[in-house]
Length: 482
Image 1: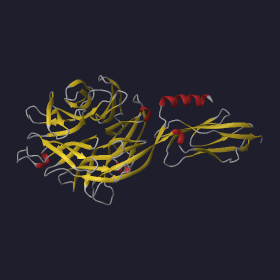
Image 2 (image 1 turned 180 degrees about the vertical axis):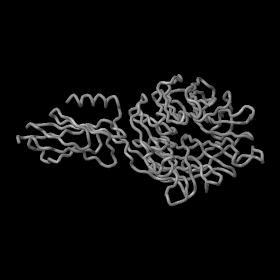
Image 3 (image 1 turned 120 degrees about the horizontal axis):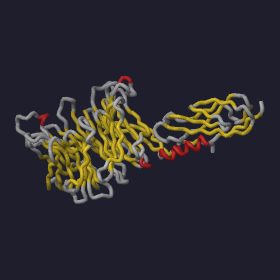
Image 4 (image 1 turned 30 degrees about the horizontal axis):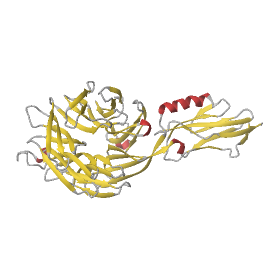
């Protein structure tokens, strides 16, 4: 092996990403109404459940919206729970045959009659049969002021941890709150208010291999990460002192390796951080301020420890020229230490924003909110699903081509080399070694062998969205005298 290739082999080991994510297909979920997804979960069998809100027009009050989909993306059932006021589902959780949801409801009776209907907000939690979409129970509660359930998480004790905020004491202000709720009936078992206002809780998730739960939110206009037990009692709390308003932690993903990944908006930028189980920040990745603005809404971990962040970006440098000033769905891949591997946009003339990342076997599913399924229709929203198939680097269908099919040529004549790569794959760089000490870079190159002999031509391909080092089978040329 030439020194050139030995160096690249070492780099490939450091990158540790042996697969490529190829866009397989996409589809829409929705009706002629206006549907906006806010969250999604899937079960081990690949069934997908999407939650959000639905309205007949942009002016109409919304109802909650939940759909169940088969592993192939076919809609199995749809449910629009709600009442006379505005309702919105914010988070979902699965347990065996039951799908739990939480959100904000304006349909309760705890508000004074003179309060505008679009300002009414109460805690809202419910349960649905995941096979049929039948509503099992729902519960609403709150004060005459703004209340909201933003997240929920199951515990081993048949209870739900429900987090959000309350404004029940106007002289105090917005306060973070956690409820412990009976999973079978929705009965409130315990409530715990969190410290000084303003504060709120955005996400709660269980930590694998641990007895506690991680949660994120804001307190005093600063993001925080905390560990709590099944009763909502705090073990530790880490406040992000260097990221003030409008910074928000919107995504939370505890890994099996014992890290807590968080992400959101750091100022106006994308940001992702990793903490250990004691609340210490291990690494942090924040995008430069002069790049596109945006936020991370979902995090996930793929094979080989690769971290994926999903959300949206907006600005003047978007891929679609007509989209400037709008939003594109954005996904980024990071090494386990936070180094950026690649990033990619999916979008078009309308706004798109990713809300959930879910692995389904060897496929990564992106769930996004997207405006207008068809441009000619009136403006409306749908759920947009994109399946990315993970392809092993050894299975990438690429080969070296040359304009000398016989692989025999005379010295002193130029020979062209190029790669045959399907259009669904995007190359970033191709490096060539011609076996006579000469090298080149490019998808298509030309080389002249000055002396006769047998030469082995080798190439290393770097794909844009994974497979940073693909070593192609060498081509052996026999060069004769002129």
